Length: 346
Image 1 (cartoon, helix red, strand yellow):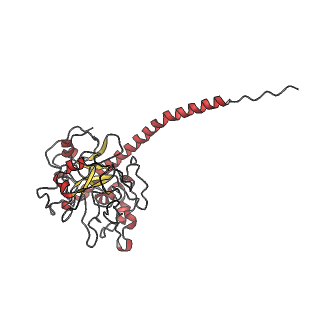
Image 2 (cartoon, helix red, strand yellow; image 1 turned 180 degrees about the vertical axis):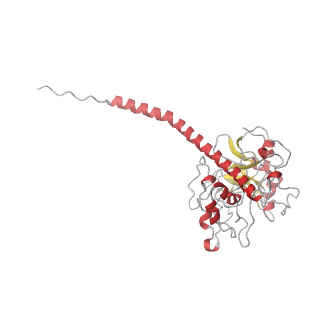
Image 3 (cartoon, one colour; image 1 turned 30 degrees about the horizontal axis):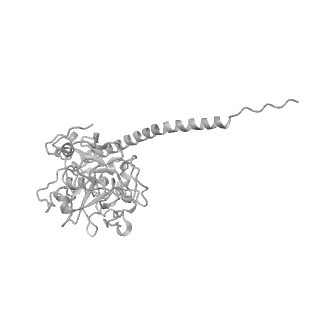
């Protein structure tokens, strides 16, 4: 009886060759897939900035003024437990139910912002009023390109900041001048207790920045995401030069929780300024006298997008602003009526 023929199959060498070919193909495809994902994330991020800029128009149409960049503080509460501009824009980004769930007669609850340095301890309302609302994750406030760590017990984080202008003082307003810089005046669209109108944007709505983006902190020191502590007197003397001159690797972080809360009307979380160009180090002055109109800050936007950040303008448009933009143009787009025209925008 004839022997049955062996069934044809792959040799070990052939299998190894096939596996090697598949590995090479995967290696070639992965960068392309990652580029597609990042392009999609960047597009979504741009759209989020646009939604924030357009929400300003919706609010202005209803109230004849832009919302304040930061609201008032509440008696008996920490000064930083105050509502952000984001809270006022909720009805205009399809979050009206969340807006209606908030009791604005009470302060917002806030996460603790401290880390290496004790800073802005957590605040909870008696009876836990607003507890759930303040922790709610709002997708429009999150950039999908920012791979920050899991938020733990505070999902209500934020990647998008409102522009308070070029002036470097945290709570400077017409009714609360600074004593360390008595000549300083508010010059941007969205600052502490501001009531800026569309007609106040005399440099032109298409030339005035209103929103940009910021990488969220990791909860532990990470130079690019931290807000660094600098002696206030030094920072106030030369905010741009001092912050640019520190070593972000060795400087002490005041907080590693940038953007941990969309409800906080603070420069840690919901506002920025045009002192330094995008993706430079953030600095905050410590040891300031009196109130926060004397606290010096350098808070530029930052992002995971290669080479720059998305910036929303007063006309509702969004443009990609490169890190290499000259300082004069960057500051020009930060003021509402400085008479400058920014150049070098994409």
